[in-house]
Length: 123
Image (tube, rainbow, N blue to C red; front, side):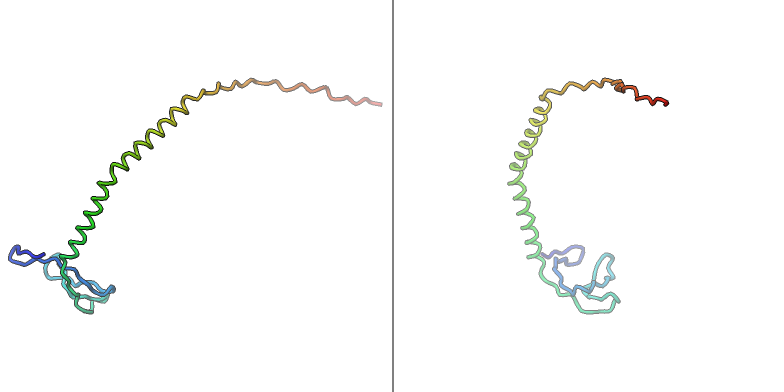
Protein backbone atom coordinates (compact mmCIF):
# COMPACT_ATOMS: atom_id res chain seq x y z
CA UNK A 1 0.00 0.00 0.00
CA UNK A 2 1.76 3.07 -1.21
CA UNK A 3 0.57 6.61 -1.91
CA UNK A 4 2.04 9.99 -2.66
CA UNK A 5 1.09 12.77 -0.26
CA UNK A 6 2.75 16.07 0.52
CA UNK A 7 5.67 15.46 -1.80
CA UNK A 8 6.55 12.17 -0.09
CA UNK A 9 5.75 8.52 -0.74
CA UNK A 10 4.01 6.83 2.17
CA UNK A 11 4.13 3.07 2.41
CA UNK A 12 2.82 0.64 5.02
CA UNK A 13 5.65 -1.61 6.21
CA UNK A 14 6.01 -4.41 8.75
CA UNK A 15 9.32 -4.31 10.64
CA UNK A 16 11.42 -6.94 12.35
CA UNK A 17 14.17 -6.15 14.87
CA UNK A 18 15.77 -7.91 17.85
CA UNK A 19 13.60 -7.90 20.97
CA UNK A 20 16.16 -6.12 23.15
CA UNK A 21 16.36 -3.08 20.84
CA UNK A 22 14.35 0.04 20.05
CA UNK A 23 14.12 2.28 16.99
CA UNK A 24 16.22 5.43 16.75
CA UNK A 25 14.47 8.78 16.90
CA UNK A 26 14.10 10.38 13.49
CA UNK A 27 14.83 14.03 12.79
CA UNK A 28 11.20 14.20 11.61
CA UNK A 29 8.96 14.94 14.63
CA UNK A 30 7.05 11.82 15.69
CA UNK A 31 9.00 9.59 13.31
CA UNK A 32 11.33 6.66 13.95
CA UNK A 33 14.43 5.58 12.05
CA UNK A 34 14.97 1.93 10.98
CA UNK A 35 18.18 1.85 13.03
CA UNK A 36 17.84 -0.57 15.94
CA UNK A 37 19.62 0.54 19.11
CA UNK A 38 20.16 -1.14 22.49
CA UNK A 39 19.35 0.30 25.95
CA UNK A 40 22.67 2.20 25.98
CA UNK A 41 21.59 3.82 22.68
CA UNK A 42 24.39 2.05 20.81
CA UNK A 43 23.67 1.08 17.21
CA UNK A 44 22.88 -2.64 17.14
CA UNK A 45 21.54 -3.35 13.64
CA UNK A 46 19.08 -2.17 11.03
CA UNK A 47 15.47 -3.25 11.16
CA UNK A 48 14.28 -5.53 8.37
CA UNK A 49 11.31 -4.11 6.45
CA UNK A 50 8.55 -6.29 4.98
CA UNK A 51 5.57 -5.45 2.80
CA UNK A 52 2.75 -4.32 5.08
CA UNK A 53 -0.10 -5.01 2.63
CA UNK A 54 -0.42 -8.66 3.64
CA UNK A 55 -0.34 -7.79 7.34
CA UNK A 56 -2.99 -5.11 6.87
CA UNK A 57 -5.11 -7.53 4.86
CA UNK A 58 -4.80 -10.19 7.59
CA UNK A 59 -5.79 -7.69 10.30
CA UNK A 60 -8.76 -6.53 8.23
CA UNK A 61 -9.85 -10.14 7.57
CA UNK A 62 -9.60 -11.01 11.28
CA UNK A 63 -11.67 -7.94 12.20
CA UNK A 64 -14.28 -8.80 9.58
CA UNK A 65 -14.49 -12.39 10.87
CA UNK A 66 -15.02 -11.19 14.45
CA UNK A 67 -17.68 -8.70 13.33
CA UNK A 68 -19.44 -11.38 11.26
CA UNK A 69 -19.44 -13.79 14.22
CA UNK A 70 -20.81 -11.10 16.53
CA UNK A 71 -23.65 -10.28 14.10
CA UNK A 72 -24.52 -13.98 13.76
CA UNK A 73 -24.39 -14.60 17.52
CA UNK A 74 -26.32 -11.46 18.57
CA UNK A 75 -29.87 -12.88 18.10
CA UNK A 76 -28.98 -16.02 20.07
CA UNK A 77 -27.45 -13.98 22.88
CA UNK A 78 -30.49 -11.68 22.92
CA UNK A 79 -32.90 -14.65 23.13
CA UNK A 80 -30.86 -16.15 25.94
CA UNK A 81 -30.95 -12.90 27.91
CA UNK A 82 -34.71 -12.50 27.38
CA UNK A 83 -35.26 -16.09 28.53
CA UNK A 84 -33.14 -15.51 31.63
CA UNK A 85 -34.99 -12.28 32.42
CA UNK A 86 -38.40 -13.96 32.19
CA UNK A 87 -37.20 -16.90 34.27
CA UNK A 88 -35.96 -14.58 37.00
CA UNK A 89 -39.16 -12.53 36.99
CA UNK A 90 -41.25 -15.75 37.25
CA UNK A 91 -39.20 -16.83 40.25
CA UNK A 92 -39.73 -13.43 41.87
CA UNK A 93 -43.52 -13.68 41.30
CA UNK A 94 -43.61 -17.20 42.77
CA UNK A 95 -41.72 -16.02 45.80
CA UNK A 96 -44.14 -13.10 46.26
CA UNK A 97 -47.16 -15.43 45.88
CA UNK A 98 -46.10 -17.62 48.78
CA UNK A 99 -48.21 -16.71 51.81
CA UNK A 100 -46.21 -14.56 54.11
CA UNK A 101 -46.08 -15.98 57.63
CA UNK A 102 -47.94 -14.00 60.23
CA UNK A 103 -45.67 -11.92 62.37
CA UNK A 104 -44.63 -13.46 65.62
CA UNK A 105 -46.01 -11.90 68.76
CA UNK A 106 -43.63 -11.61 71.65
CA UNK A 107 -45.30 -12.13 74.99
CA UNK A 108 -43.44 -11.05 78.05
CA UNK A 109 -43.19 -13.89 80.50
CA UNK A 110 -43.09 -13.38 84.18
CA UNK A 111 -40.25 -15.08 85.88
CA UNK A 112 -41.32 -18.46 87.13
CA UNK A 113 -42.01 -18.44 90.78
CA UNK A 114 -39.54 -20.42 92.77
CA UNK A 115 -40.61 -22.20 95.86
CA UNK A 116 -39.42 -20.67 99.05
CA UNK A 117 -35.96 -21.75 99.91
CA UNK A 118 -35.82 -24.11 102.88
CA UNK A 119 -35.13 -22.32 106.09
CA UNK A 120 -32.60 -23.52 108.54
CA UNK A 121 -33.70 -23.86 112.12
CA UNK A 122 -31.56 -22.96 114.94
CA UNK A 123 -30.99 -25.78 117.40
